[in-house]
Image 1 (cartoon, helix red, strand yellow):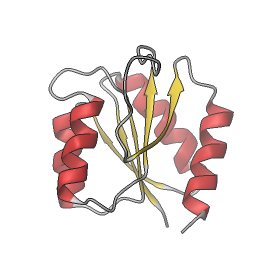
Image 2 (cartoon, helix red, strand yellow):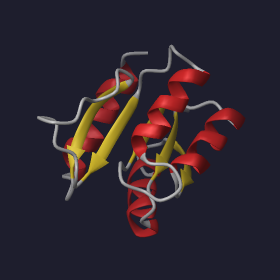
Image 3 (cartoon, rainbow, N blue to C red):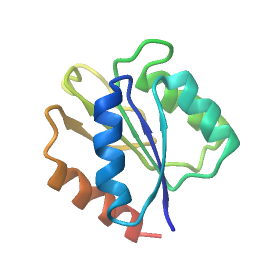
Length: 119
């Protein structure tokens, strides 16, 4: 079973994504800050991380940076954000894609399944 870490300070968004992904057979863990996400990454093995960008106590960029320091081969992070402007903000190399909020869950799920099927 593939394992996904969802990191978002909005509890309802975390729970909604978790329900959708669990219904598709994925094992889900949730964190509500970037720093909490990094701690969970250190304690468990994940196939993918879906993270918000703007969060208190460690944003998505800091999460991606720290994940890269822990495991430079982990390249399956997806950002979900309402604030990112890719024209002016360079995306970290371990972030595969970003989705703007409000996210179309059908597109997100499709991309997640495609990404995890690569293994």
